[in-house]
Amino acid sequence: MSHIDKELKQIQEKLLEMWDLVEYQLISSREALLHHDLVLAERVVKLGKKVNRYDTKIDRQCENFFALFTPVAVDLRQILATIKINANLERIGDTAEGICRIVKKLNGPLSEPLAQESRLLEMYDITLVMLADARKVLTNYDADTAHAILKQDKVINKIYRKSDKTLVDFMHQNPANVATGLQLYTLIKKMERVGDQITNITEEIIFYHDAKMIKHRSDKKKKNRNKDDN
Amino acid sequence: MAKNNIKLEAKNLNAYYGDFKALKDITISMEEKAVTAFIGPSGCGKSTFLRTLNRMNDYIDGFRTEGDILLDGKDIYDKNIRVDELRKEVGMVFQKPNPFPKTIFENVVYGLKIQGIKNKAHLEEAAEKSLRQTALWEEVKDKMHKSALALSGGQQQRLCIARALAISPSVILMDEPTSALDPISTAKIEELIYELKNDYTIVIVTHNMQQAGRVSDNTAFFYMGELIEFGKTKTIFTSPSNDRTQNYITGRFG
Ligand SMILES: Nc1ncnc2c1ncn2[C@@H]1O[C@H](COP(=O)(O)OP(=O)(O)OP(=O)(O)O)[C@@H](O)[C@H]1O
Ligand SMILES: [Mg+2]
Image 1 (cartoon, helix red, strand yellow):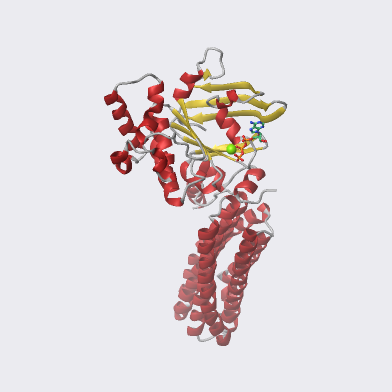
Image 2 (image 1 turned 30 degrees about the horizontal axis):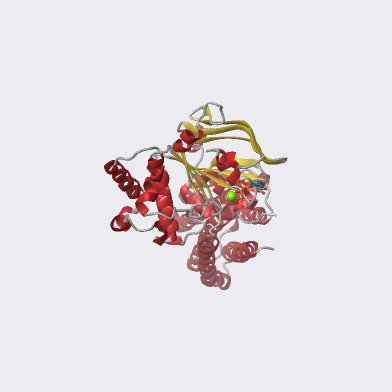
């Protein structure tokens, strides 16, 4: 293996280690929420520091790679993608931490029926599959799976758009639990962001492999479709 | 892909050294007032192609071409073309700076004198103009009548470019013009190329991928006498469409 390939492999390995940490944070935030597991919540928050160290380390490695190898073509795209994937992973980790901070403020576990009804658990399930699939696509590229991930984010967005009505209804019927309703809404918003971040990551992977920019495209189409939805 | 006019083009060009086919069916259009870079592994035919563009290969025994090379739409290998007229239109700068063992002034006005221009004021004016164009004037104005060989390598190369510019060509061919220069002199030549493309059509052969990226608008990748890929430099260096191009520019050849 050439020098440059070894260097790229090392950077990729670091990124995957960080990926595993962040995935653990996200899965754990779900557990902590459902079981009001304060020990686990605290662990997720603490792990955030480790994730930040990875974030800094990977950025540094990419900077050095630019300076020493002046990459072009596929190498250039891989490093550009790595920088952005790194940033998005770090944000997903932050979100998981944020959720755990909310858990610490709650008096007990989130009621399962409520979590079901508001579709928060469904959002968790979908994003966790998206995240796992994106990791697979990064190490073993497959355009179909990559594009399927992008489709899943549309499902997440739809759930998010409909959630306010569900929650308003809930708060009307349970005026004593308005606080819970608001917290739930915050959680749903956070999961919607996670969907976006995994989408960003997937777009970067597609750019790296297929040299296709799919970001910010068809904004017009999107607008029209939203109109149709309403 | 060209937004400017086409200045130079090759159509189904084959070139031979005796039985050896050095260029195979090359078709390419070079934009006017833009920089076109030729890249590719050693021996792929970059210099051969560059030299056919002003018929430098005519002197080589057994060299012949098939197909057309058009300058402003006219075939430069046509019987009615005068090679000295062609060379006035298409100047050349070589890998190693090759000033003549004469004064700086004599070097710059060499081409003009050959054309029969004798008026001293005219020659001095022309010399100053081309030395200013190559950003050499301030450095040499007080030693115009000293030997050009006393200049540094980077200054000599800029002098050779000034010499090429003095005869007012419209195309300048450069064969690895900075490969013998340090990074500062290289940066000056690159800066110069960037300035010159406002007025000239430039074709440059380079082994330095970053240089191709920095100075050229379009890049052609050659491999074993064939033109493998030609396109916007931006595209070639971010997302080349041919695997051989990608392997070459990322240094994973062979
Ligand atoms: N005068 C010559 N007589 C015979 N063969 C030649 C001559 N000049 C070049 N060749 C051959 O033609 C092929 C192309 O040579 P050319 O000099 O154009 O390559 P190049 O791409 O400029 O290489 P480099 O990057 O090393 O300068 C090579 O195989 C070379 O051996
Ligand atoms: Mg050569």
